[in-house]
Image 1 (cartoon, rainbow, N blue to C red):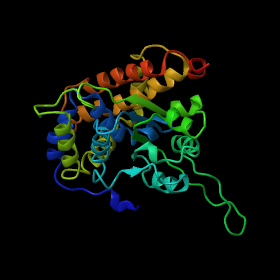
Image 2 (image 1 turned 60 degrees about the horizontal axis):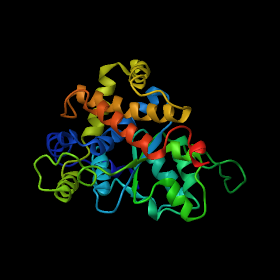
Image 3 (image 1 turned 30 degrees about the horizontal axis):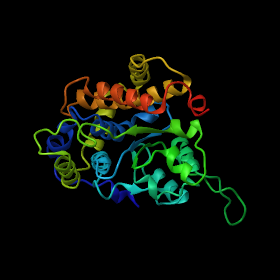
Image 4 (image 1 turned 90 degrees about the vertical axis):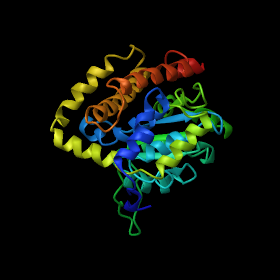
Length: 303
């Protein structure tokens, strides 16, 4: 993995037509694009990263959502990684993806005994402390990334297979989002024949027109000179989420962060959907996440 992963092909306009515009009416597609765009905001918001994990049966379109997200920064296929990499390997990739997106397909390939620690590290942005050959401390890798992931199982179900119990702290760092929409992962097929055709179109687009939206978003962020206003904008968006437990308000803030990224992209003409569409999609998915985990604090629910 090297910086060659941040490659471009095709055009921004092509990407906007084939992926961007199709986010309208498709919350999971919107989630992928907003997750990809939220990375550059973490520094300005002084927030750690965290992740979203789409859970659903195979062939629902989860991988297409991942590739749509990776197409924001690079080649849809080549920019994503699988969970199969060890924790050490992922540290290197996360550091290289700093301030952008770490997309990991298929959680089932991860070592269920290791994954809890990996999720903590990815979200907290620090690698393990290691000694160099002469016994001194080697510099620890650091990063800020949004993690976007998929799998047939959620985090806790995957850990349970190895006899491990997930802790609420891990679950809140990687939020399970159910991929049960109208047509697999999708709701609005934008005139295509079915869910599979829609997924295929997204995958094709992600390897034809890619690598434009992310850099354009960063340029606009630098040009607008309003980076200092972002924390206040985030507080305003958070207030639109229902009041909940401490864990729920942390999750709400992460959804709001993605909504903020999406609304900026709409405002700047990068994401061709109506104003408010990103925020609305994140509110809807926040509700789906809450319903999926039961109400209240996760530890209480488990007891």
